[in-house]
Length: 225
Image 1 (cartoon, rainbow, N blue to C red):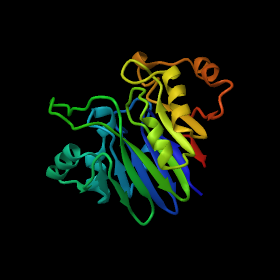
Image 2 (cartoon, rainbow, N blue to C red):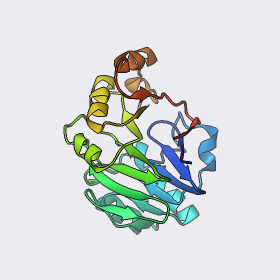
Image 3 (cartoon, helix red, strand yellow):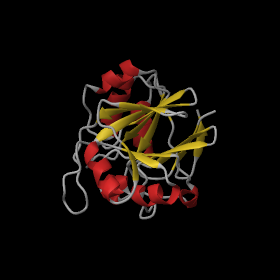
Image 4 (cartoon, helix red, strand yellow):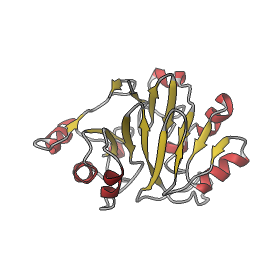
């Protein structure tokens, strides 16, 4: 049984068999983070890119729990220098651990650390855990190569940005779902600030008649897939 918890913005915890994968751990400064965000106990941290609202607490959590971080080489190297544990990887590669398989795909966005240094190419993650497959798209625009992710695995759930402004919006996310051929769409990267506010009725209207289902998760909500 695989459980996913939404931790606000683009942060998610995926759990199965007592193990936890934490994606884009923007928790301590996240205005939408639920109280349960303080209870995370990650065994693996995935970071899609270096912007502060995604890199978030990765360094602190890795040092506190001794768990590794996986991202692109520039982020891996930065965190390694700061004392975190890291797993070497980059876009196109994959890792196999005892409790999950993770493959890294591209995302169309930008990436830099808070001091302006280049953060490498942004990425997305295909996560297989407990017999279920979750795709976390990171911050991305719509692009046709998302169909290649669908060729890799049968996707149970796709976590897609919908806020527009910095990423694709609602209409593009629906098109992305068609490319990904996933069964469930979970919107993310919206409503954290006014600049990425989304009307829920717009979301629901946009997916009407589509072959996939929409699940709008409130921060702190958990879902078994």
